Image 1: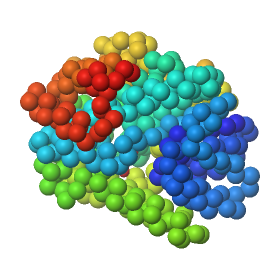
Image 2: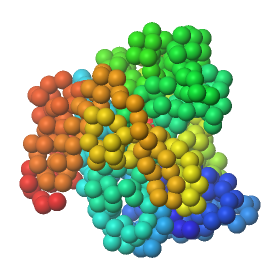
Image 3: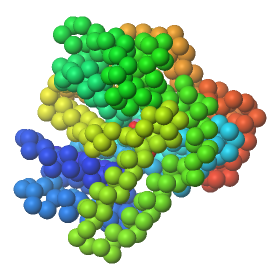
Length: 451
Ligand code: G6P
Ligand code: MN
């Protein structure tokens, strides 16, 4: 079985490769094609993978290419994990809004809109190429903003594109540990959009045990979301929100902490990675160890400003081991390839699962997965406050899709201005001008180019 990784020179690719090495099952991936437009980046990651595969019996064969069509032709699975505009782009997405006093973040708020405006045209083109060159392939989309990008691709690939994110799985694992239950025996009633979802119930042997957790302040203080949001707020909404909802519920605090930080998250990760990719070619034999230490430096500072704003302390060491990102991708791929029936929280078209959203809206909900793909399971309706946010943010996503597919600048302005975390049309207008200056690729807005 062949797996093509788009963004094959990306920093997290060794995690996927590691999961593949651990898979000894029948019909596993035997061939990995790394595609990246930057040959220097794939060369570095190729070195890490070679060191990682050393000593493993029968590792998958890894090949690299800078040609998209060659990477896609006849493949079985595509992992798309690209970053349009690179980490420089991320840093600019974050800085512009923070300078305006509103949230500047990779996927949430105005930064997520800018990132979406850059990324959708590129991912739509990829979807078209997959449709032409590998019509039977399944696309697993990691590319952020994951829900929006999955919806853009689904307009061309239907349900053959499935979006994934590690945050709901990570939360499920943490909540299960805080409750002292086996995560494999619990049913997590989680629903919303990517980076905008809520865990409403945890059913074990037919009983919802989440209320036990919400009344136990000691247990709540034992895990990330409990510390970020605090027991009082979790009891007020009767659910555990995705960690990204900290940017909404504690917006003023998060923005203040991010503005006070010496650099944005994107700028910090950019510095770390620039050094890593630059020095690796000079140090043969130590690429894997270098990658590990760079990764651990990155993981330990994840959402540091939010934790600081909430007084949540250090990140738990078990949350730094990862395991969500790559394992969910592998579990999904195996379920489809081998008809191994399972349930996973994924980003798929709604098809009636969640009330208040149309059938084509990509939502993040538990799905039944088998050889036929991923089907969303009927979910209880969202609470009114949650549905309000989800509806607003879906309208933002739809405006981004309109702008990206028609070139409408006014749709881009609307996307920014209606976002719940952008507080004035004046700010939206200035941000759009700034993003257009920062990113030449946004030249398509305003009908300057047909898309
Ligand atoms: C989580 C999210 C991803 C996001 C990543 C950012 O894993 O689910 O969607 O890309 O965090 O992490 P970073 O280390 O780049 O800030
Ligand atoms: Mn994510």
